[in-house]
Length: 181
Image (cartoon, rainbow, N blue to C red; front, side):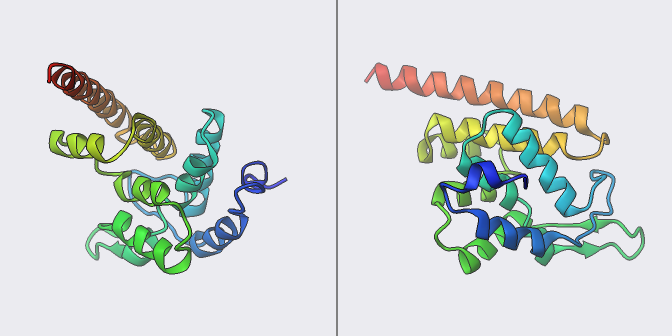
């Protein structure tokens, strides 16, 4: 049984997943943050999401979160280290070109999986999405971090905990403001 069989029969995502697998199969990630090639990393993300009860849309976002790395990969000629700047945006472009039927919720998760660090972004996301989407974004980020190398993982997890705390404070403040109106 393939890793995606259970989740995608009803959602009919297997065609998308098969194309993603073929597309990312041979992409190396030569940098200190990754210990796996892109396909192996993505499989680890998906397994983590599955083990934490993610729904089919979040699992699909896990499969798609790094597809933009194929188009954005550059290699630093001095160090040989791979960079993937702008991969989230490039990933959404790839999804829209190849699979426009992917739900907007999934595209938004892909677009934001690396960008929830500043307060303004958290406030914007709170106004655009429901609490479940925000929790799914945090879970996707956590799955991504756990599927990296050990390099910097502890710092990333501390950063995520602070971001969740900020999110909860902002959410509580906004709810209080709304109730006082």
